[in-house]
Each structure stands twice: as structure tokens, then as C-alpha cells.
Amino acid sequence: MNPDSAMRIAPIAPGTHPALAEQEARIIAERGRISVLYQVLLNSPPIAHGWEQMLSAVRNRSSLPADLRELAILRVAVLNRANYEFEAHAPIALAAGMTQPAIDATRQVPLPQDAPLSHVQRMVIRLSDAMTRDIDVPDALYEEVRQRLDAQGQIDLVATIAAYNMVSRFLVALKIGH
Image 1 (cartoon, rainbow, N blue to C red):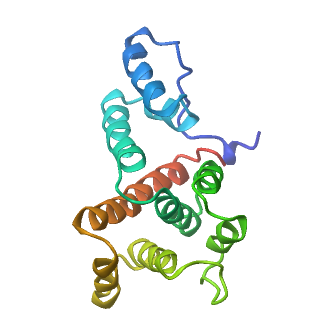
Image 2 (cartoon, rainbow, N blue to C red; image 1 turned 90 degrees about the vertical axis):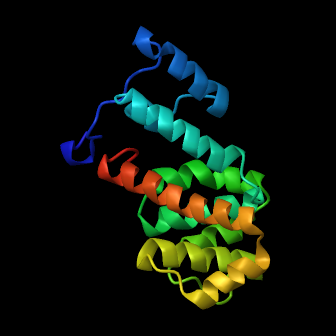
């Protein structure tokens, strides 16, 4: 393996550190497995715990329809060049009802005019782009978000985009999945 492509922090194999058993059990209960991302996170048990709590809320307890949540995650992964994240979430997006052509469109920057996305999906892409690339969200775009989503939906969408910016940047910085 090319040393430039190797992960920068070695993952902790599940079951090899008895002190992590309870934490590993919680991760498995919430996620079904301990992915390589969580194996790396377990090098810092407090961070792994907080990460699991926040990302489980974003993924599993959000008021957003699953297709919109996954659309935002895919777009952030594309913008931040987090291929591992994109590949992990593309099947989830399909299961949530997104079509393969819609998923493929998320890979294109800028988004093509003829992308097979609804108006609401395009809004999610525009918000993901603004938050990820520009940081600032134009007032007109946020007003559109406000008109489409209640307060909880707004929080859930903005938190999803923000959280997956954290995830993708963590993955890229530590070369996880490269």
C-alpha cells in the first residue's frame, strides 16, 4: 500500500480492548456494526461517544424525510471529496427512495439544470452548497428553507449539513477510506 494513502491513525479492531466493550456495544446497537470510521474514533473514547450520540441523532432521530437527509449527506461528501462517505451513503439514499440518476446528479458541481431532482431537493442541494462552500447562507435561500420546513426541520437540515461537514473533513484529514 502506498504510504501516502494509508490511514493516519490506526483503527482499533472491535473486541481487542476490554475497556471499550460497553462503548462498542452501544455503537453496534445504534449502527449495526463498528465501521472503520468508528474504529478510528475509538482511539479517543470521549470523542467516539459524543460523535456516536450526535450522529445517531442526526441519522436516526431526525424529522427530515430520509431522502432529503441522504441527499444533503451525499452532496457534502462530494463537495469535500469524501469518497468513503459518499459510497457509504449512496445505498442508504437508494433505500430511502432516491433514484440512481438523482444520486449521480449530486456528483456534479455545479448541479446541472436538468438534474432529476424536485424543487425541495434542489433547495437542499443549494443549502448544502452554501453551508459547505461559502459558509454564509443567503437570506433568500434561507427564507425558502423556512417556507418548506418547520423549526425542527430547519434545525435538522442545518445540523445534518453541519455534522456531515465534520464527518467528511475528519475522514479526509485522516485518510479514512482513501
